[in-house]
Image (cartoon, rainbow, N blue to C red; front, side, top):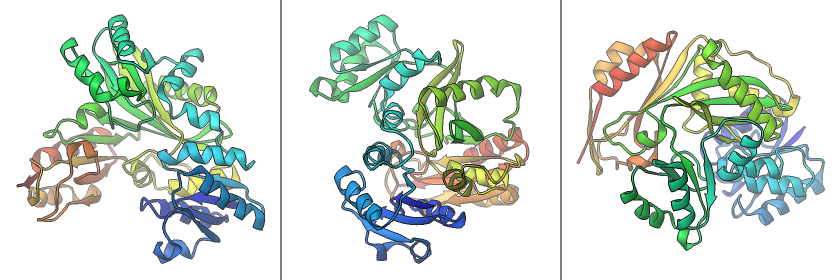
Length: 406
């Protein structure tokens, strides 16, 4: 099988997808922005071919590259795994007659108002929402649904650009910052109070073959806005617990409704006093290295399982569920330059057996804004056979380690 893979050079974990495709027997042609010589030697040696383009989100440039590949021989698949690449690559894929995620599916997985409308029509419980193109529409929605509401870019990822509006005094300012009255469309949603988690899959022909369930502590919006919090993402090994049956059923309904075929997915959900509510989906792997947690927790190579799905249309491994695994983000106490990290020796002494990996910036490193996300500054990742013990370890890490800056 000949697979064209978009952007093997950036971000750094893209090389693992190339490695996995090569390992399961695919010929891999990379399409990327950097010169071939800029790629690591280990990536270059696994490539059958390479096409450099000025940007991988320029459909015309990518289409020309794909057609050059097709002129030289048969192309079976055109794959992308980065959120910003999914929609443009779907349009190129469809124009060039290559199987894979359709333009319709890519659009519905990217445009939040359209996504929610399609899923509500299929009976999937979602927060009330609209796509708004004016401040008056936002005000009308707030009046109809009541506050708080969430205003977000319709095609954003994570909490980037998202604003929670809790009372009327905040509404006009949020509308102004959103740019909706200047022609920038926004998604507006009912705020759902409750616990937030995510459900990640690899699906083959619309059927889930691998599943992983993770939890946010606290929810993403609070985590991305509050400096003193050391937020956690924790993947459970209790996926067969009865409480997850509803999540699993809802996710399969989402995959069916959005006509997702052979693809990774990343779905977010809320468990609230109003019941389970679907939040959003990406037709791609999750961010912040979540697949690395799943690999460490389950004694498997999930990147290779993705390649197995693409190339051979079947899984090769089963997750062991031996461990739960989680990461904790450690924020500097202020913006500036890091001068030191306190408490590391204590954590190493207590938990080195369960440490997966870490990123601890050294003195003199510039801090990154809290809004930069879970990977922006320091972080540590751990695993443990017992979910509750792992949570206690992560809590202790967050209370013990202090990242000092000036």
